[in-house]
Length: 147
Image (cartoon, rainbow, N blue to C red; front, side, top):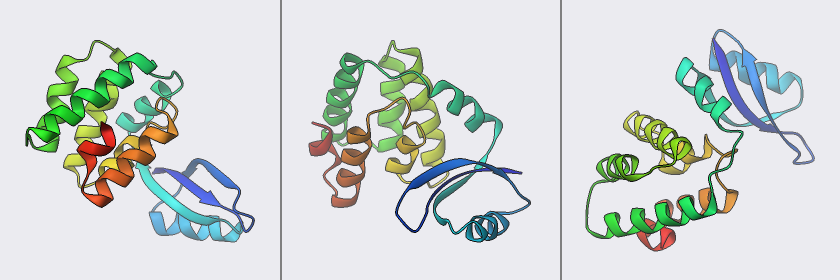
């Protein structure tokens, strides 16, 4: 199996990559042997491989602005999160954003936090957006954070 990981060294320098191992515990041991501290890990599947290759192009600021505004409005209306993402996926014309929303919705259904779902697409999305989603999710004010 292949795993995507994020780790830091003793100085706090972040590193990420893909490593092949039979289990997550083996990845942890391999990274510890390199004096790295594991921050995040997930199994690399065909779907996540596709998502990673999509991640090289940024989503336009205009598309993100519209997305965040609509996301906040739908959440304020009390629509459940997975259903909100499905609605936004249908409404967007941006192919990359549509693919990201599909992936986020699928990961969310598997129990991954919303912020981690969006963080899987950090090459396409601005860091500030991912951090705002994380803060909103943790504080219970996601609609206000997106607004």
